[in-house]
Amino acid sequence: MALGLQGSKSLGVFVLLLLLAAIGAVAGASPAPKSSNKTSIGEGGGGSIYDHLRQYGLPISLLPKGITEYSLDDSSGEFRVFLPQPCRAKFENQVRYDFNVSGTLTFGRIADLSGVSAQELFLWFLVKGI
Image 1 (cartoon, rainbow, N blue to C red):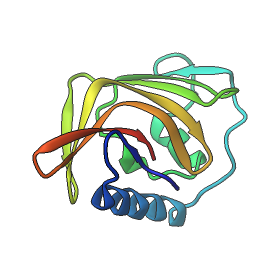
Image 2 (image 1 turned 45 degrees about the vertical axis):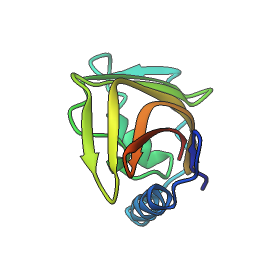
Image 3 (image 1 turned 90 degrees about the vertical axis):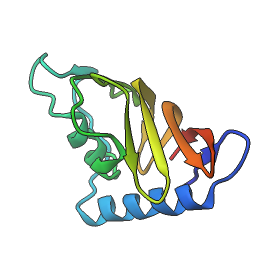
């Protein structure tokens, strides 16, 4: 599992996300889904984005509660999550989520991540992958 931070590697954020991934793996990982091509909340029972995270071997706590809508292309793994408002989460470091979070899901990781940043000391760094 790799964590890419723009400008610097953050050991604290890496350890936190590694721990979250381990918790998700223990909770029950299964192979990547082979369901419909595109899914969105409110458009036919494709499950929640949290169900998809679990299917990709990722902990559901990687995304905040309160997601109102999402889209996922199962063939490419590209996803986009829409939050009602930007929010922050406090782990070892402060993590900030924008209105829109997007990336590419593959089993056990998220690549090309946008819309998430982590604070190290007084600086904010974009999180590019988990």
